[in-house]
Amino acid sequence: MNLKTIGIGIIIIGALMVFYTGFNYVTTEKVVDFGPIQINKQQNHPVQWSPIVGIVLIIFGGILIIPEKK
Image (tube, rainbow, N blue to C red):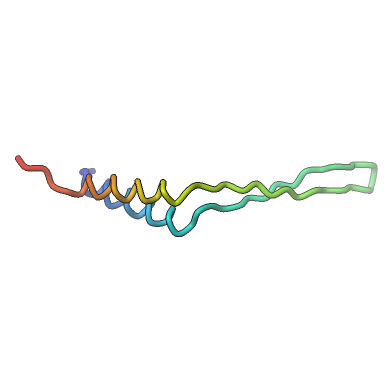
């Protein structure tokens, strides 16, 4: 795997991070378990990042794509 392929992959990941600044996942917790009666609670867990991180990745990927002089 060469640096150009890695750079293109980093640019794609950076672009996705700019457009999608986070996601949520949901967990279910059992609150009450009293015989046949069960009460569950769903909890949101947001995962977010700054779009600046995506921009930095795009720049870093662009640097990797630039060919080196031999």
